Image 1 (cartoon, rainbow, N blue to C red):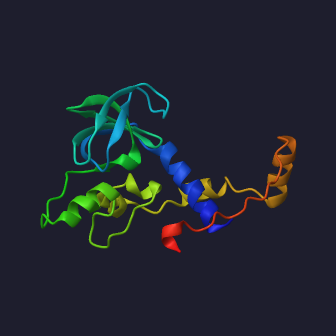
Image 2 (cartoon, rainbow, N blue to C red):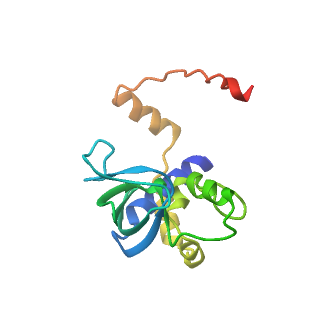
Image 3 (spheres, one colour):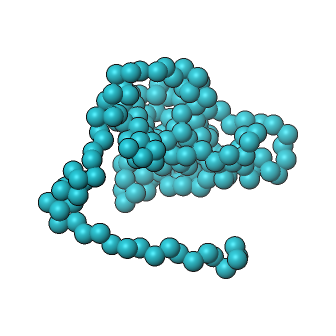
Length: 170
């Protein structure tokens, strides 16, 4: 199994295994985003968060947080919210930029979707589980099984050309 596929399966397993209640944890909006009535992109918008707005995280469902804020109660994309209290450090303009882009932290590293929802405490408390590792490995498939599945679903392979670099990056 490729590393990328293994990580994807592990993240999918993690998202399914998350307990629904996070016991109303504090959070902070990383960027402006809509508050939705349901955890779907096309759900009715019931409010809007601005960068830095405090929220109370009530639960998580897939890639969505159910939040309560001064601007409304509903669902916000997980990537738009940082779990935990907002950090105040030097007060430099770079800190605001870091909060807005998700690059807040000493290493200026952007977290991936699977990690963004985990706090430092969650990562430190993580324990090795041979049972869970076997469970993740049970999701693997052979190339032949994948081809058979694609054929049964009448899926076809398509070549996709790489996008050219944006003008600014050249």
